[in-house]
Length: 103
Image (cartoon, rainbow, N blue to C red; front, side, top):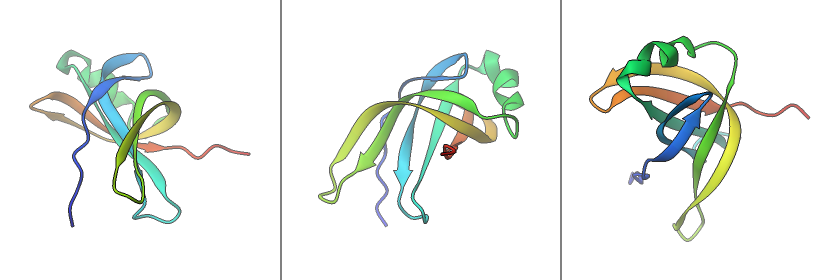
């Protein structure tokens, strides 16, 4: 399996500024938006507090691959759950899962 490596872009998670992205995961049914957000180490406590709490707004890029294999980035603003947090060499990392909108 070949996995595309997406480019980190400027992003916002709630009030936090950092870098990250969302991507469309077609390996799940139905397809879901997942992503990652990196913030500064001095905001690690704030980011960790978002795990398993109320959903928060994410503003940034969502990557989507078309049938020809081309990857397109689109600016989005969606509500996400922070599913996991970890401090890494790049700072603080949060894994994201888009929240389905109620109709």
